[in-house]
Image (cartoon, rainbow, N blue to C red; front, side, top):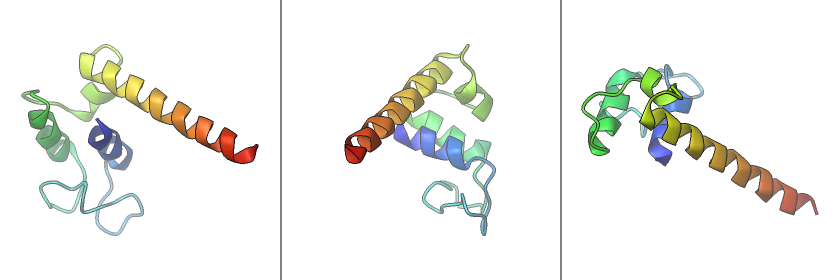
Length: 85
């Protein structure tokens, strides 16, 4: 699930941009796009997945993505709350 979150955060990035990472560019075409999302989707058993499906609260994978992002954000907030004490 973490890989989907990372690709979604870098979606649209290309070589030279701050968000680009060659580790997230699974097909190594120089841009993080639907092709990279599709490669992740096949790993999770989805035949074709677009960034719109991942970000849609009406699709099961979108719901999982939103839950994952929420848990990640809450975890980071708790981590910083403990550091500040």
